[in-house]
Figure 1 (tube, rainbow, N blue to C red):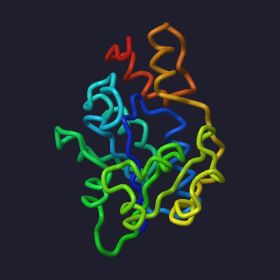
Figure 2: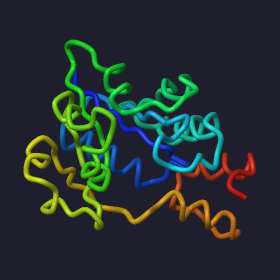
Figure 3: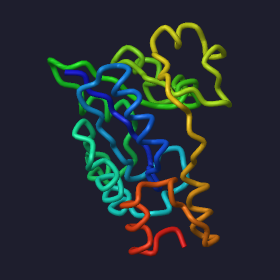
Figure 4: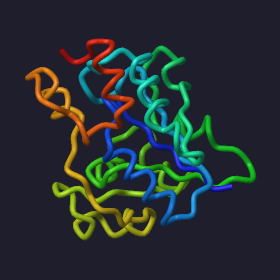
Length: 189
């Protein structure tokens, strides 16, 4: 079984996240993509929406894809959880583990806790980011990772939150179910 972990704050989840996950699933013939929202982000400012809201939005956004699932494991830890812990938790015999991220994060792996060793624990699937072009990554890192060919979408959660604060539309940036949830709960105002 081939499973990819896709972690992040997902604050909020948007079409770019979903398109990236589906592209990775399709290209690398993954059986499952497991979205893992972080409870307390280790390298970012605290999430704007509470973990429970981000978890619920992810479940709404992924409900229509039988290959997508959402785990609340990191949230339930109620502490900062590092990627090496998440990978260790989800690593099981008889499965091949993948980890989805952007090239901007991939190039930072040597700075992560137990970062360099992670390259041997699973296969990293990287979406190319303009600020971290694939050819500029160290050759050893490129050998350990795979680039995800996908129609890159220029969406960012922080921009979506700003649009909401300014009273602008976020239609076609997030799934309709997520947009309704955000309005219902008055998130990001």
